[in-house]
Amino acid sequence: MRMYDIIKKKRDGGELTTDEINYFIGGVTDGSIPDYQISALCMAIYFRGMTPRETCDLTFAVRDSGERVDFSSINGIRVDKHSTGGVGDKTSLVVAPIVASFGIKVAKMSGRGLGHTGGTVDKLEAIEGFRTTLSDAEFIAQVNKIGLAIVGQSKQFAPADKKLYALRDVTATVDSMPLIAASIMGKKLAADDDCIVLDVKTGSGSFMKTVEESRELARLMVDIGKNAGKKMVALITNMDRPLGNAIGNSLEVIEAVETLHGCGPADLTEVCITLAGYMLSLSGKGTPEECETLAKQAISDGSALNKLIETVKAQGGGSKLIQNTDNFAKAEYSRPVISAVEGYIERVDTEAYGLASLALGAGRNKVEDKIDYSAGIILNKKTGDYVHKGDKLAVLYSNNPSTFAAAEEKLLAATKISGTEPKNEPLIYDVIK
Image 1 (cartoon, rainbow, N blue to C red):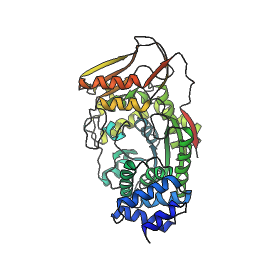
Image 2: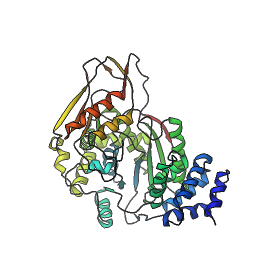
Image 3: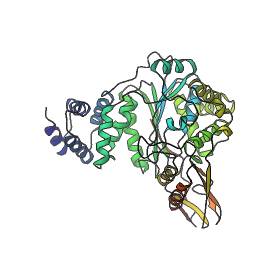
Image 4: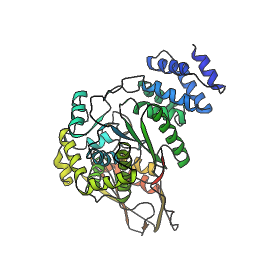
């Protein structure tokens, strides 16, 4: 088998066999295929696409390119939620304890943020002492004991994807539907969960900019998961505005805790209740509607908040911070962002909001960058709100005041205020089963 022939076949619109795809991913993993040939096939896939069968084979090959997790010693049904990434997306901190409070096992391995999107692991590390690295034995023991553990991805999951993504990033082939699906699901299927709920973001703060694209990606990933024997559901959720009012690590943890107290922002609460409802439903707790009622109950009776406190304590974190969020370290400096005009916030560029938070120190441009956990943004006004001249749009927080000017400029430029009241878009566009 020659890589030249595989590239030529896909360039000319042919369908690759399972063996050809496995040969390609094997060569990506062991380094036997040079970068220029890997890039050439990615470009051919970008233009010619892949059939569902090819995409599924590619995903399974990526999944099998590295270590896989064995959760067989975890007692009970295992369910996970994966988001394609957004701004202000702290749903895991709310949804996971809700679901675990009903005895469902949530063995969650999460990522770090990079660029304009935040990562669950970074948010958890804003809690002093919280251990995001556990041994396999510790991880499994904790899930069996309290039903929930959230850690960073310490294993070498899907190493082929890491190499593929690096080359796609510099060859303008990132936005290829088969390559995106294989990247996301290859890593997700390396974990040993029974049920997976996907939160596919759509809009200006997400990778997929239109509902149609998001729906296509969701359908593809759901079908791949089902072919792997998983129970699957995908929600298409709105990322044309940040989720909630907080952007930045400790600020988002505080908002998640407020949501578990029953007093979080309406948009964040709605998305979390819906996600939790589908996770519980896939796990056999009832219809999605019945399970949404259960999720609301877990918030109102305090069991979800208690589960988060129990998890933080089990992983070495300061549970007193969750019991009283006033104890979180605050940024030394703050600056309000004031509106110079009057009108409706017609729309915002959510990605630019994320980049404004990044400029304040709340994120990282490179993997090795250090994070200011108390930096970020609290939004006082959002899309659809009417603002008067002089109203406070947001408050910026940082321990480095020299970051304020650039962040404020980004946020103001990303906020379109006009006399046009925008159409009220739904938070959840579709559910793909």
